[in-house]
Image 1: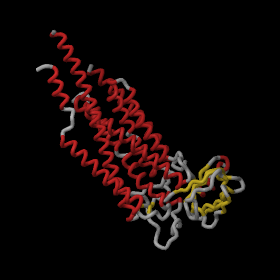
Image 2: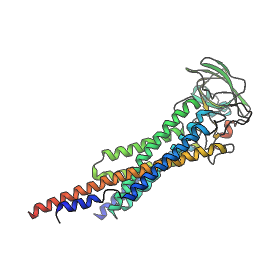
Image 3: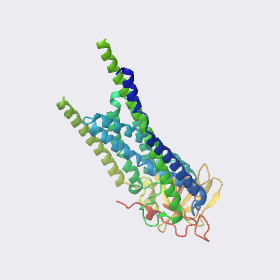
Image 4: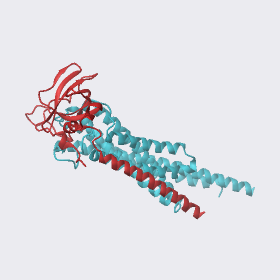
Amino acid sequence: MDQGTLTSQRTATIAAPAWLRATAILWFIATVIVLLIGFRQALFTAPPDGELGDVQRIFYYHLPFAVLGMVFPYVNLVASLAFLYLRNRNPLKALTADALALASAQVSVLYVTLMLLTGMLYARPVWGIWWTWDARLTTAFILWLLYVSYLLTRKLAAPDQIAPLSAVLAVFAAVDIPIVYMSIRWWRTQHPAPIFGGAEGSGLAPSIWPPTLWNVAGWLMWGIFILCFRFAVERRNQIADQEHALQAIEASLHDHQG
Amino acid sequence: MPQQTSKSSLKIVVAAVIILATIGWLTFTGVRDNKSYYVTISELNAMGNKAYVRHLRVAGNVAPGSIKRSGTTATFELLEQGKKLQVSYQGTEPPPDTFKDDAQALAVGTYGKDGVFHATQLQAKCASKYAPAAPGATPGMSAKPTTTATALPSTR
């Protein structure tokens, strides 16, 4: 068996199997349909809010982004802890965990960014200000900074240091997630008190629920789609890197034989 | 080599404990004085002379019918649990649309010796409740406004 056939066999494993491609396409189509239903309900069929009027419709986007912006960082935490645990026990599995950590951090930054932007668009007409340094907004901004710095660390660290350094950083970054969540319970804020499980008089009217849930479901599906996509890309990069390393070793072996 | 790794992991554990303890302490003390973002009218009255020298946010409900607008300035009264505060707003832009009778509002500025709060900024505060307008009711008028005091987290 010569070197050429070895390489072609290995590269064949990189390509996604047909069933995975089919699932991805079906998932994407389902996501778009759910998002379109959510869009129609949020902007057209839901009644305008009694207090705020039509501008309240931003809520149907701000809430899913905020909820998911506080869910995907936990995926990053779990993947990072898995990496740290597997690092010396099962390096190949640890590499997979690291790919998931990167993908979830990218999705986290995306959703936290969208949360902050829709929040500012909502705040301007409703509160009269774009931004204020209350506990909720400040901790949310810190959350954004933490995951941006996570991605920057991955860009700037030395190649063999990227995974362990970023995994440790991820564990510390995750401390902020529950603080963001609890901020409107612990402190007086400009941001409204909790709507779900909040004090008496808070909550959603029955007609507000369907557009809220459709959009949470749609953006969750969209988030999972990008997460898997970014994960696959990172796995492909890792396998390509391993391939390069293997080829270098094989080449040096050939040199010795010849 | 294994000794070295256990040494470095001990260092990491110590560093982690120090950082987590610091964050925990900051959070705890932050939770303890949770009134830093705004004060209520009764807290403003209880501050004594300190109330006049600090830049403050005061929260309350806009007293119905008390708003007198003229361009970018407005005067109105804030109500909170039977306490009243006269506010004179002189800002660079008109108050937001959500600033109206019975709405929860934050006035940002300084408390004058004349008993009037001189605000340079107004921020509306929203209830954590979404519902379509009740049939027959005029939009923008809540039947029963929640007071700022009840919307507060419990005081520690």
